[in-house]
Image (tube, rainbow over all chains, first blue to last red; front, side, top):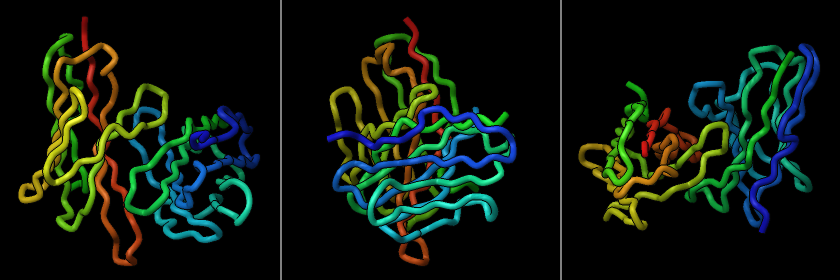
Length: 113
Length: 113
């Protein structure tokens, strides 16, 4: 059973480009969470999704950021018109139920140049 | 007051020492609790869930004190490989009955030879 798979591991984008981060949860996990971690800072919740539904997006910036978890395929975190301040590690986690601890993916390190 | 507070440390201890971390939380309705470990530039990994009765896993012991709203993690016989940041995580359900995991900023542990 593969763990939570995130790709790419590293992503470099120029200011103004779009970044698409992918997350495949563990088999049997239908709850997906996205977190951002800035250098030297703690984990910040962004969004919680179940298949085809956004459950809680209270941590998502109001503009440029969106997330989806379609019926088929991975969850996608999309950042439009990236800025330098978007440079961070983006972690995806999944769980089988809402009461269980998470399993994290290895993260995508986004660098905006 | 932060929802979840931890002493950031760093805790510098010699190999073989016993070290304890505390974490306080503000929401008395919190329902489940976890300790995660995060190595530098890696993803957080679930160390252990914390149960009301307390639980032990090898050299690690977790305790929950609901009355005082804190959880603790005790590490006995510290190893060099225990050097990491330890994250306290508290789970509760918000007004919309959605699960919310609140993360502490972590306590840094350095075990020295």
